[in-house]
Amino acid sequence: MKEVLAHGPADLVALGDAGPRTAAELAEDAARVAAHLARLPPGEVVLVCSDRYLFAAALLGVWASGHVLRLPPNGQPETVRAAAAAQGVRALLHDRDGGSEGASIAALLEGPAPLAAPALPPLERHLVTITTSGSTGAHQAWPKTGAQLVGEAGLLAGLFEVDREARLLATAPPHHIYGLLWGVLLPLRAGAAMLREGPLHAEAVVAQLERHRVTHLVSVPAHLAALAAADRVPMLRGVASSGAPLPAATARALSERHGWRVTEAYGSTETGGVALRSSAGDPWTPFPDTKVSADEDGRLLVDSPRLDPSAARPYPCGDRVELLPDGRFVLLGRLDGVVKVAGKRVSLQEVERRLLSLPGVRDAAALAQASPGVRGEEIWVAVAADGWTADRLREALAGWLDPVTLPRRIRVLEALPREQTGKLVRERLRALFDQPAAGPAMPPGPLFPEGDEALAAAPGREGRRLAFTIPGDLPWFQGHFPGFPVLPGVVQLDLLVLRQAERLWPGLGVLRAVRRLKFSRLIRPGERIALELSRDAARGTVEFHIDGPAGRCASGTLAFEREEGA
Image 1 (cartoon, rainbow, N blue to C red):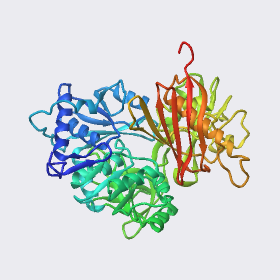
Image 2 (cartoon, rainbow, N blue to C red):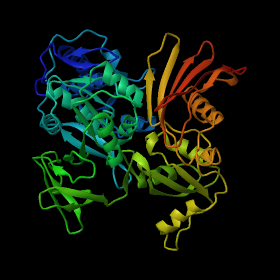
Image 3 (cartoon, helix red, strand yellow):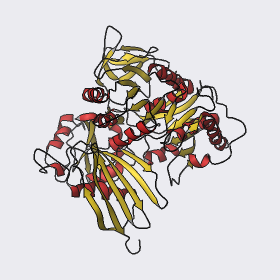
Image 4 (spheres, one colour):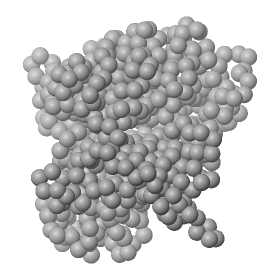
């Protein structure tokens, strides 16, 4: 384990609301996972886990058992199910309560620890397969050696000044290469402590920063924008951002209001880390071991130890750049059909392919549209289909795509305006969204959360915390009120609370009453809010709280009555 762990046996490796853990406990838990997996034929193990400590134990256990870790592109049910069913996959490990598929990591850790500590295989071997969405529309699997990942984590620890006294909180998910490297492997390699939880809402992040005396924050632009609006945050030794460009206004607000100076990281699954910058809008400085160049079309070319040995060198990336005389470079935009929505990569071709796989869908086309704020871009789609609505299409896509990448606007038509050659000119596609729609283009149906995490609950209850950014183009803002749009209370109750409760817990029954309903603060377009739902199945009730950047917006209790025969 010393190849990965820089801790002494009694050193703290993880802390959080789920409890502290030492390096010795991590080694024992990894041994338990390894003992479970050692009975299986060699192959890959899919891991979906939000608890960073459990993720680390599973990762080391997979390696020690001789298997290869496979990380899905996102945690959506259909995506995970497809990854677990892939050829060569031997097991699915997760930390989801009530999951009927795969093995619960927490359950594996309840047994006795093997007598012998597990030994890791040579790190030069292929030990992780990271899956991402490529420009062809199909998910692409990228093999990584342990040496590449652990070596990059050590490099980042030095560049980011993470030492043995550091405590690091990451809001990026650990199945993403950014979250894996910065949120899990970096603290392990630096001898630091990782926070087990990855809160999403600004108030929850601030509470965890203070409660656990966090020194370093690893986040994404959307989360940092919400933190910039917070009233009070603790000082930190370091803040990192990646996944999308950090808006200059967000960086300025974080610096002026909270004294935070954000380090941005640029890279990809294919290349690993490439460059850093310490001020939003500045040119990028390549890592010390990375060489960058450009071809005649301005395409970025990268050569570094983090490339797959079989990859072309230098590796052609999907971005255009301007090289500067001092060795730095400026990013000029994407060259292919992969876009970033709130920091998450999504292929327009994949969205189209998923739509065309639905029965009754004859044609589909997707485009990326610039979006104000931290989202960067959003996806719009036009579909030729019978018997489908925008709501149902969005719900069908939700099984495959991250909630934040779901199309924001959907037009359902008789036919798309293709030319005789079959080509669909982008201007004609874009014009479809400027025309009055026969039906609603924006959903009066449920919004899909950008974050979803389970809450600790008393016996007989279950709770969830969902994070949303309220779209500014919801039809209910029109006329309510001119010059100062706010989300009506009845829409909050229906669009957010009731529909999310029914989505999470089908079979709640008929809504009979809303009790102790209180609206405390206004919800404005573009605000990031958190919705907490707590269900008491025996009483047939769901309590809710909606919190915004300035505090509690609404609260109450829904009372349901099960229908006869249900």
